[in-house]
Amino acid sequence: MTPSVHRPGKREAARAALALGAALGLALPLAALAASRDADAPSAPPSFTRDVAPVIQQKCAGCHRIGGVAPFPLESARAISSRAGMIASAVQARLMPPWPPGPRSPAFDGEAERTLTARERATILAWAKAGGRVDGPALEPRPQEPVDVREGESMLELAMPSAYRPRAAKGVTDDYRCFVLDAKLSGDVSVTSARIRPGASKVVHHVILFRISAAQVAEAARLDAASSGPGWTCFGGTGIGVGGSGGSVQAALNDSNWIAGWAPGSSGGRLPEGNGVPLPAGSRIVMQVHYNLLNGKAPDRSRAVLTVAPASAGLARVQTVLLPAPVELACGKGEKGPLCNRTEALFDLSRKYGSTAAFVPAGLLLLCGRSASSVSPSPVSRCDRRIDTPTKILGVAGHMHLLGASIRLELNPGTPRSRVLLDIPRWDFHWQSSYTFVDAVQTKPGDVVRVTCRHDVSRRAHGMHGVPKKPRYILWGEGTTDEMCLGLLQVTRG
Ligand code: HEC
Image 1 (tube, helix red, strand yellow):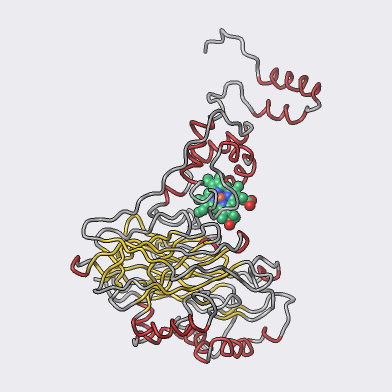
Image 2 (tube, rainbow, N blue to C red):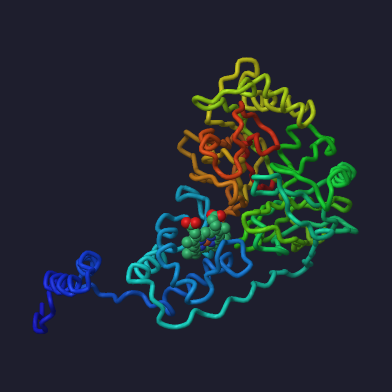
């Protein structure tokens, strides 16, 4: 202890601040500030230019840029400083940057580039608390990362056939649209990475790429022709039946047509070395784009940028396993209406999507070991699937619609070998993506994978944006008024 230099104590500083503040009519805020700052605290407030701007640039400006998906840019020093308070509250509440997997999830590829470290979070908060001042310029915007094309691979850039101007019914702020992309493949290839170059990045919110077989191309063309303008309206999936694949339900579930999910700011979803999603000659890609009309209706012509390897590269074949669970959601408290009756809701499904749609709820109950004749509705849905061949899980995704509240995927639940594969504690339909593990998970025959979803019908009563308000008993279905509970696993076998 070397108390040689006199420094004003905390109390003295507070008193001085109070006196000064009283003179300025600012007593309370200044006193609070003085009291919260320990005279012995080692660090000065963070520097904007040195500490804050590089973090914002790396972890926020990818979306928060002029023309980007976020509602305002965070590129100039002024723009960042003028929103210091708002930035602090979004960062404090962990709303930004958006990263849906919660702390129970395993480590995913790209997570470190997207999420804030504890230190970065503390730095932003301390800077904002100290007034959010600028002490130099923000850095130059980062150039776009080039596509990583590896040896033996080529890049496939597939644009939408023509520009599409997003539109939606009155009062609806989202448009979900499917477009066919033709890679004009002369031979079979495997997709090793997929990213989206949005045409109008302000309105392109998220994108899912599906594969359709040569046998399904005609059905896609019919849907496209029946809708004016390029593409057709689709929501949960492509709207194309699984019929064309010719296999059993089990086969379709074990090897579905997912290629990749993409959300703004995601790096390109490269599969681990040596793996690829097969894209046979003659197949097509259906690109489902979610347009957020709150950001305008600019015409969009987005492109999917894939890296592909030829069949001769001998990559392990990545399949997407679908893990659906039944959805049986009764009307909420105080809600009434003819569609609150399950049978009426089933008839409504068949009116909207054809008679097979009305058999899906019963099929899911049976698939998940429940009775299809005595059904008890519940906000929680669950399904277990036993793995019957050695399976390596490379990545995961979850899918629900607008009433989804949380989703979890677990391996061997309730056993000593249980582990969480994905946990999204606050589901947001608008932030869907797929996640590749840093370390792939090897499973063996007899292991069980469980999907658990929680839905919240009160979101309908609260009139949350995009949720149709009409009360109904909700079952599994494709539309905005229907729900899903779906886990997805990207796997290789053997
Ligand atoms: C992946 C894209 C993306 C990234 C990365 C991102 N944001 Fe956002 N941000 C958005 C979008 C889109 C919105 C509009 C609200 C929504 O859709 O959730 C938003 C909204 C906000 C808001 C307003 C929140 C409110 O109360 O309405 C703030 C503040 C914000 N972002 C700050 C940040 C900061 C700070 C970072 C980096 C640490 C960041 N964002 C990273 C996309 C992003």
